[in-house]
Length: 73
Image (cartoon, rainbow, N blue to C red; front, side, top):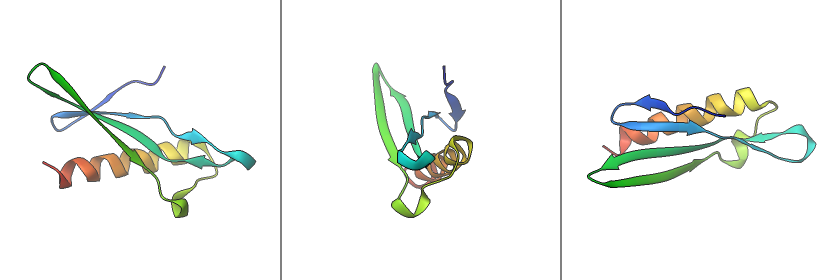
């Protein structure tokens, strides 16, 4: 099972998606607790960011999620 990665006051879970021809689309979920609510945001890779391995796609997804958090504080 994929673990949540803490970052700033958020949590990130990378969950890149397998595509045809052994390619991977970067994908991450961002979670933030606000009061008694859990806010979720999805960060998707662009078509130019499709990767050849899951590990590479997860790395891109984590980087994009951290950038999103930094830009949306």
